[in-house]
Image (cartoon, rainbow, N blue to C red; front, side):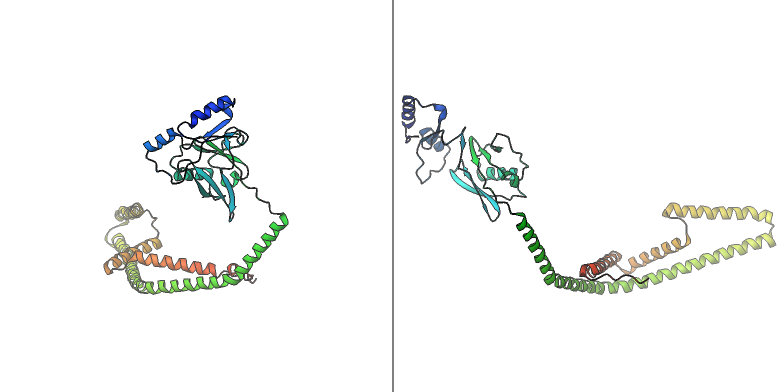
Length: 348
């Protein structure tokens, strides 16, 4: 190894010595830290000077490097089950530690974090040891299974993740049984109390909703009863009209006129009734069925009276839906499968 201290004439001295000793320039790596072009460039861009002395100008033979790859600069170790990688940043000449998430993080996340930490990184990528580029969507857990190259600008770092010891199958089965036992103990100690707390909360919510619904329910019953009475009165009024129509037609047919005169009249009355039923379908998009007509008339009268009396029908419907949802939650919570009770078979 040949070591030269830098200065204004350090490069010239090194080149002359290298030419005299017949050193192959392709097998020499120069770390130029305090050489005057770098000083001039740093002063022009107004970079702050470091208080610590810059490292010296060194020349290392290729026995420590292979094809320009820098080893042992990037370290990886596991802390609390998470891989921690330490990378030298090119701009600030310091090492930075990154904690990765093996499952949720990808190679792209790690590269983005590197560029955010050091704005002087122009190019960064990860390749396998044989030069194959590793996709950005690769998860960190897969990346840590083998050695790889981290390329930052013009530097190539060899990264050697530590080998994780595989857990024997008998220990895995033991851990699974312990995990299942812990789950059973937690369920036995906490589930019953949790169910009681949930039931108490739902009962309190149900009681509050019913108290808020009570005045609206009372007012709704009054208006609905009034609307039903009106619909019933209209039904009886229609029956009375039909009876009067029958009496008038009978009187005109057998006493005043003859059937030959009244037959066209009854035909047009029947056809007019059919036109009225079809008009009802066109306007309401519902078939003219008497129970449906009665319900429609009842609802129409109810909403008309509700608007006049100030009843909030939308709020009433929201409360009814909330009560139904809470009751369904209570039913599911009290289900024998949730309480781990034997299901009673129905009697035959």
